Image 1 (tube, rainbow over the protein chains, first blue to last red):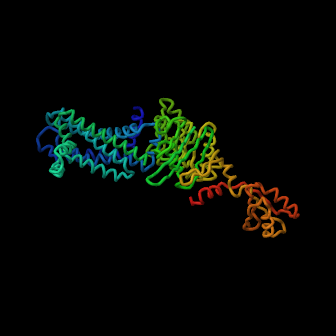
Image 2 (cartoon, chains in turn purple, cyan):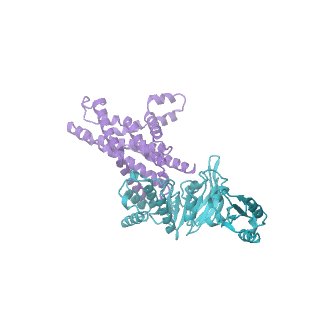
Image 3 (tube, chains in turn purple, brown):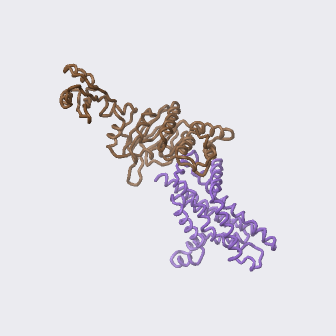
Length: 244
Length: 310
């Protein structure tokens, strides 16, 4: 546990050692606000809630989260520092969890930066603060799932651009899994059980369920399982690279 | 002690390291010598646990690297090729990170960082970001992180590559100072480095150990070991060459550009110097100059590695 904390601290500090952190947080705040007020018609709806804000999070994360996760392992591989890190007396899990948690905390920090919206909506009306709190938790879990995907895919390559594109693509598939666009493609030639499974993989469905204010166990399990699965795959990729 | 047994590494259909077996005891500085692509770095990567061997085993102070990786890695300090580190950090923050990961807590962290900083003379740049440092300083940061926990084993992949002559001398002196109690393995293709710091040298070619001896022992394997070059006053080199080649102690004679001959000893009969002195006495010849050679490491290297270009 101590090693995870040491790696987490180093990784977290490294975001702020370069302009990456500031650019990410600024872009996230500007875009999420723009989407909320212009595309989401925050005022025109006349309702005191943050649905227009959270509705755009899956789409915003599609390109912002891969920008954070692309460097997790690709940069280590490109600079050669992975050889230093993985010959220190730590386990692979120490390294994976330390890096992942640093990235997850960082996205959490960016999410916390949107609190003025919460304050505003409370000033303007009487929103369901429980639903808003649940939405924040759901959004953070969704960012965690995207980061776990990115963590695994960045371990595959030393090119950050390739890691970015791969992560964006896989996350897009996970977002679209519950949409008719994808389901119609499978309908008719795959068994209903598989079709349900594909629909069940949809990140949006689970995120929207939480956004309604209900932190159901199944949705939490979905996100935890998704994070766990992709981090486990990261470990397999790193082990395979070591044997390769 | 390092015990390497039947270590093999394959990348696809290519075997990069073939059935390597050797042991290294404390107080040794072992030099891995070999052309680029010979398998030196791959062997080091397997010893340090970064790469998994295709077959074979490595034991570090009794710990098997495959089954007790962390215990084995705790015994070692490793400088990977090119001395990679986290360049966005300051030297002090980087060394503190390594010290903490290596198990130091509280005041010990400061103590370890101070000791490593002083050993490789880094104090002047301690609060500078690593990316702003010169290549020489970056290499020293790499050495400092490898030394920080005062490990019993040091694995240094090309530790002086890219350093200026003064820095090379400093690093070699440091390795010599550390070598009394520790096991040091360095890889290099700088032959003078082997003579300067190694107590044992292993020439690796195409993934196999082709020679394993002391640097002096390797020099003795050179064709030129104990060869004698000479020139006689008033005697034509052709005549001298003919006379020398008739001696049973002489294997062959070569003409030297600019004058004189070089006599190579017949292997079984050893040193030809006495026979040459008797020959000169018998012919009443006075040498203009005469010199015996001990053999060159680069000669052995070229012959052991098939003269491949580095």
